[in-house]
Image (tube, rainbow, N blue to C red):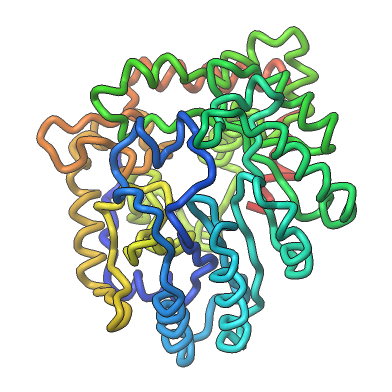
Length: 418
């Protein structure tokens, strides 16, 4: 039986901002690459037109001023006395002066929270700016799809594979700052029909001593006339791992980067009865608590994303039409009550499916990845009838029988620090 859906209030939105953990600036929509599968590229809708814009520094400063003023009379929960400034694109290093100036400004204005910095980059300009990134202890997420063949969809504007330049720049960083590289650098690999999980894993691990996060193509917001092209490029990480001749060793080495483990972790968390999010869940029957259904984050629960056009969104992965507000030359425009009402309406629009879903308890579906949200014929990709839910449970049970040591490892090394 589906629990009563909890409707959020404007004060809930305010509290999320008080405890905000990350601000991500889309510093530019320009990019020095033209990746075939880019989520902001020709296969997809759901984002503002790419016009080689730079986010004006004054708008970013207004965001910081707005938050500092909000925080002045409020204390964050004890776990969140720090905040991360993250830089995104496009290719954010194309707008390095913005990054330098906004960090300088934040260090002057944000005095009651510890600042951390992160960036997602294609590494094409890493050789030019790595000293600055190291000096500020940036956490760097490098987009590298594996070897030259796996990386071959990541081309420049002349259609040339960017692999050699990216690989060279990353090796330069590793050789120049080995201790920093070990602690602060990670990799993300997009999985395509030119990839194999085992090959990606071995390549990045052998060359850089790292385990890359391997992600499939976004399956939301695909243009109708590009579906066939999308299907040609897409590939399944699950199937690739299952086909590996060294499956058990590969899964053990990848651990949380193996999607099987991610699914199993969530299954144990939500179905074992041995995991509690907080003391209330430990002391009282959590089944009686109202909660927000689906796997959708509350507004600003994880981050605030500011687009190059000044739209304020709760995540960079969400369609820009779901903006929560905006920053203009006049200031930041956020109406907490309106944000809460819109969120509640969208959750309510899918409740008729939630009531029929056997997998409601383990739901991780973000409503903003539902292409026809708000329409009468709404379809949820995460929906489970009884048969599908039984298959889901059986799959996880079989996996635990095959690797029984994973239960203890997940409970002690992962979920205890969730």
